[in-house]
Image (cartoon, rainbow, N blue to C red; front, top):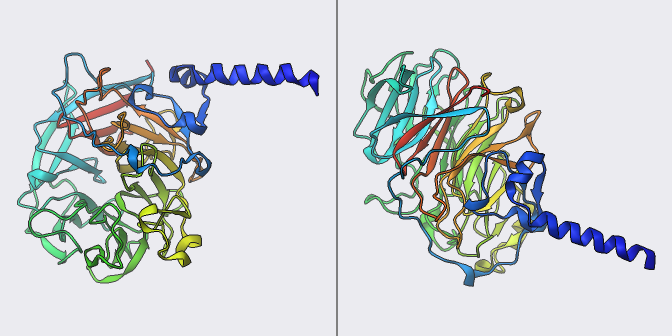
Length: 439
């Protein structure tokens, strides 16, 4: 027994040394940061750094830690630029939008963009010799906080472009190559639940995806509040849910519930399953509650507002719905708390190295309820045969200056037809183009 003591001390000393290493060392070594060290802020975010947070790492709720620390976005400083992994190039693709948010790539390669507070859908086409968009066109205007965009039917020749306004779903006639809508919007869902008439009332983004067989239209609707009990707050009816409709707009059912704000939806091309990039609740402490990215099971329950991260009870709702505790699904990938995870996409291109095949990417808009900023980046979600490993990796960083000033906030991410990546940033109102050069 005595002879083992020195080795124990050596192990403890080694662990102490490892915990003090800069995260860049982990990026170079390919190690995954786990345990309490996996909770990080913007100063520890660097391309290539991988982290894995598990349920065992979650602290106890500490509401007294809660802070209002939202950014005052500053103009992009001289020389500031998004930072990608070695071998990738980042170019400024387009600017001049009011609020560039979600993007979707049309089958012909055009990039459709929701300029949400501009109440427009834009189309961007091609890359000129200067790296900028060759064509920028307004597809539709006079919308109502548009966000979600989906082409229907799926496949190479869609006939409609669906748009998720904050209170409705509309669609426009479409044939491949249209830069301007050729007809007026047709209302498909006349009233999505919850959002007040005077542009208030909680989460306003509405994403749309179609199931691979085109039989289901899945619309995400975020909560009206941080953690109000729907039993006593009727304005939460059919909110914090993914709702299932037919493509013609007939409501079928609540497809999945307890997702506080499933901002970004994506269909996993390997499994055909719905995935969500989800904003969780605030005001339980710096490291609670984690945002997450997850596959979404039909009829599944993900906890909000009564539980989080499996069967952890929200202390503000103790004693409510004990029968639901064992039904709460733990998400596939646990992210930093307060990341504000927005649009996600699966990589189906061939330009990036083969290690990226089938992986996910998600835009992290950045924290407001954390003492030290986190997020403000694009992350990579490693996948294996269509299933998440539980890790995430910093991919595109640099949107915060060394002294904590925020100049960029990633929102949307889409894969171009040539396999490169486009990223919207509503801090500098820019679309960034990320391509692999190998240099």
